[in-house]
Image (cartoon, rainbow, N blue to C red; front, side, top):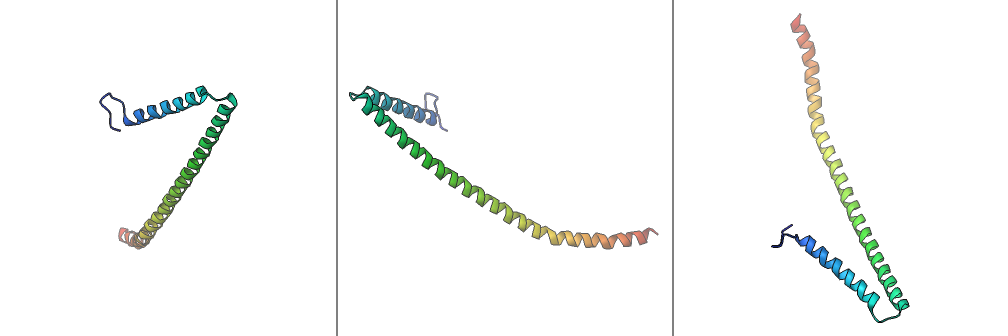
Length: 110
């Protein structure tokens, strides 16, 4: 994050502005010349709307993470298969070479 001349990061400044705006809206709703019932109903409506948006954002993020994890697991499986298929023939050749070399070494030792 880049720092402003005052030493605060952009994230801190934006977060401070958002918190101040939320506090201002809350104060406005509570101090506005409306009945308490109207103010309470409006606050409940805003809370419900915020809750629905937060839930939708959570669902979107959850689907995105799930998709990314699934693609990552597929990548790991594909890579593991590719490595196994590349290493398996070499391992067989090495095993056969060492199996043939063992009797020859034993015969040479005699």
